[in-house]
Image (cartoon, rainbow, N blue to C red):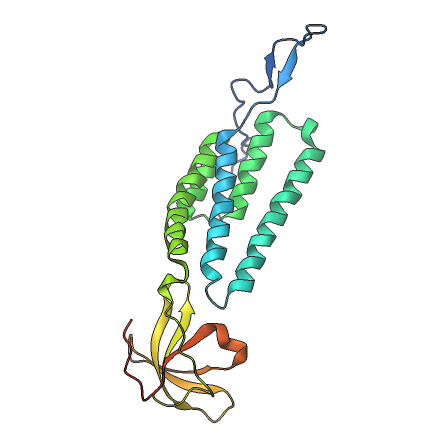
Length: 233
């Protein structure tokens, strides 16, 4: 139902000097030597992705998703290492322009880029512009995560020593998500099922039945018993 047209394969334009840079000869026979060109934009873009992944894992290590975040970081590093091995094995098969094109699209496949960034990467025939588009996307994310990671556990109040399970009227902090952090709650009471407790969230007054036991211990902190003074964050 849609018109179609056959078009040529879209490939990146050749770099100005696609071959490696030729330098002076060695001391023995004055044979010209090739010097591998550096790709600062490419390294910067990959380092930005690694930094975002590490910072994200650092932020999430404060909550119950720590293991999952660490697993995602490890998986990312593994995928990059595997791609590097494949590129090394086929190094002589491609020109420098082709290698950079492949690297830029591989990087794009690793990020959850918005449509505008993805479209910008697809329209250009320059790997440098593609790396730049990805950097423009990752840079503010990295800055925001760096600020969150810097706060670290400073936002988390110390836990009050206690014995026994939560009781009605106890004040808890409950970890909701990396974006929302620790939320102030009051224990309304236990549910019929083991280790389920009804909590009222002070932020909006909503009540939720949540499991509070050793298995979810990283998600909640008792900060005041029912007979203690009400705490405020």
